[in-house]
Image (cartoon, rainbow, N blue to C red; front, side, top):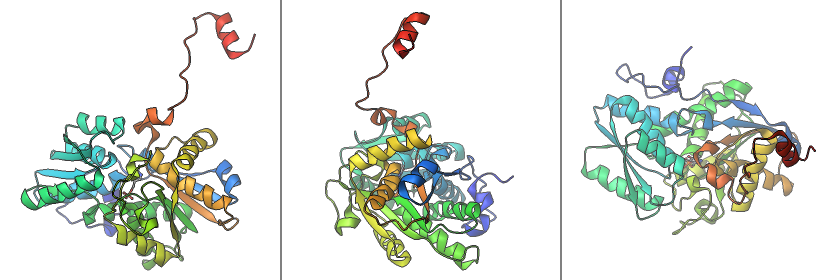
Length: 349
Ligand SMILES: *Cc1c(COP(=O)(O)O)cnc(C)c1O
């Protein structure tokens, strides 16, 4: 069995004979039918569990290509700006490749699990007093002045790798879904999925294309508002971005597919995360829950055609940031190790 997307989708990727066969086992993530969510939406809903990638997010699909290409080009170091998951992924793949990683993150606005990953994999972590958009601007200037390979999603190899998730959806369902629901932050991923669907369509692997439904957080919804947001704010830190680098790609995906890009509130995101955990057994991170928050909102508004097949992309694992998932929940009180006390606590006596 071929492990990793470079081997599995080689003919669709910028792989040459001198591209190293880098892999941490990314891709091949589960696509799970969501019965209770389907009942709520009145449609056939599937969840693509991208949190099952090696570092816990879809970023690994693009990172394996970007780092392999950096190795092929003889780079010794990679650099990225990140809301967290890109940093975690860059750090892990650089470690595997034997390269140095430099990650620039917005100070105080990164989930603890993601920061821990970047540190434990040995990246040089720079906490910037600024937001993601400022971090990306700094990285772009550094790249122009120093010999270091950029691995943000403005790197076309990242988009190439990330499109393989669209291939997997089609390979597993035998056809494209009617609707692809996805969170939008820097907008690289919606751009990548749309490219993947288009390429599979052109290659005759699928007969139709899905509508692309993108969802931004209401406090960080520049594409919805049609202008950059100077100070984006949302609990979903992975999509807390005010000026997406792939803005045009997202708009093209929306318009060419007859889709939408809309906003969901933090309350709707939190509620979707908790619903998925309780009703579907899936613990995704807050940004990921925006895709499900979005289809729940549209279903309430009567805008989901009955019976359509929807795939929701759950971009990352909830274990990245357990504290924010259970904020406001009282932790369990310790009970003495005595059967009677335990029974009383459970209300069984
Ligand atoms: C990066 C990320 C996103 C946003 O993806 P973009 O390509 O920036 O739009 C969403 N969810 C998670 C978990 C992410 O890490």
